[in-house]
Image (cartoon, rainbow, N blue to C red; front, side, top):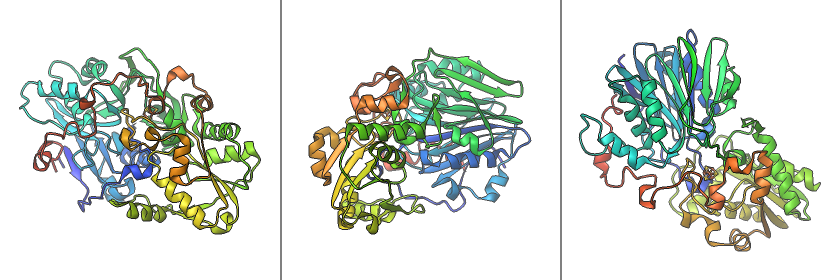
Length: 504
Ligand code: SF4
């Protein structure tokens, strides 16, 4: 078996999600495992399983046995991409794993990660969580690499990073990374490897989480500590903003490649991270419960039942019920087996799709005044359908409480909400939104209340999607966007852009 990347056996291609129907979508989950003597591919697989919520479009694992790197990736959930036989064939002493949701570049097999790139003295595989904002500059750097023919080099920011790291004619990958990373702007939690060494790095703002863990005979770096717990690793610490970690047979060493200027994504606390994660010392579940308590203080209402939109609204609903004294109950049943909703082009089909996943429990709802707690409203379509479902089940009143402020601005650091024009809170005030979704009342937690619940200093958080104050300066609008590197390409060209990564 030669080095390179491979596609899943049945060539399965899963239809892309309509992300806007589902609320905010995270970009990715990453994990790196250094564990000589262990089944690293299986450890990585279980770690990815724990990170599945961070990306459901594609999954991949790269392994190195010290002589060669092999990447296996495909479209779909981690459990759809890998089976026992595949994992058994991925042998080595270290691995990099990735679960993707696309924010730059289309959701295609070519753009699935880890990305793979041969170098002059070996090869490199890389996984990225986040989104870069100087992609146009990196594309120029790649185009200027010696021996690089003109034309498109990649259709996502991660491919560019991989190419730039792989080019190190007069230095090591480690030195090349220390030179390159200060030039990269945006959100990036990276895990990558060459044949001998595992690397991890986090942007100076630490927008996305990244944690370091210890196995009995090795190390793990992962997007969330829940992945460490899943593979039996103990948490050592966060990878610091502006830090690069290098792990090889000599052990672990750390480099500071930039001064930290911490601006962690507040939405990780609200919705994105798993509830059992701890970010910057604050338990995510506890933060969400506190957001619910705060919501009850800010927007009390006389009602008979507090119910969550499962699962993400559950901790905040618990907090709201505790603080208000209104009984907590489940009014929706969620079908846990519907992992993905397929493309639904029309509004009618979108609403049918929601019912695939969620159904109302009529005996809990009929005749009652309901408080429904959810984490966010993006376009409002989901809430509109849910409220209609509750009314059809006989709710006397429906009061909606949201544990984040109105989302008015897009995110350029790795979360796909919608375009600004599509955000319901961009054009309507709270009363108009309540009317639009059919709620009897609507209350969003205040920015201050949400930030306080995270127990982080406000200056150390990114809150740009609520305030429009972007902590990393953005380039001109035409240099941003998911399809920046694809805009000038025809469909047939897109298929030709990554000959190396397409290597079967
Ligand atoms: S803009 Fe919003 S979602 Fe994006 S990083 Fe900032 S807080 Fe998080």
